[in-house]
Image 1: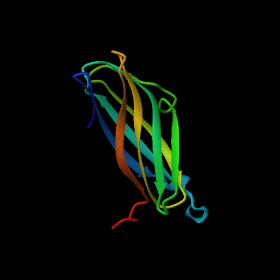
Image 2: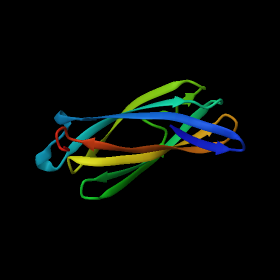
Image 3: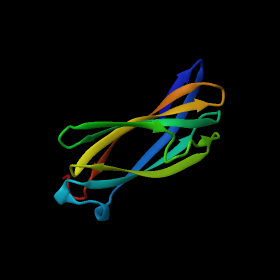
Length: 131
């Protein structure tokens, strides 16, 4: 759960992430490991809000960091009423079999409040790579 407080009002999003290794899109001999991640967002605010943009920090197993920012997610800027949910799937390609991602969504509530909704770190991992 992510929360932002402004002038006595709380802006809350519940965000969950599920990841998957994409064996058919990967080529370990070429240091190409493809992953998908599915993110589920639930607006737990008492006001509608629109997801304007995203920012990701992607780190591979050797510590190389790449940052990605852009408008919306998968070409959309979903508007969520209180209690509404939005799910999307996207992907990342790493040069190592293990990596991490974290980031945030730039949000605009219908009352005019801008807030950042952090997405906690999650792991991208080829099955059986971690003990």
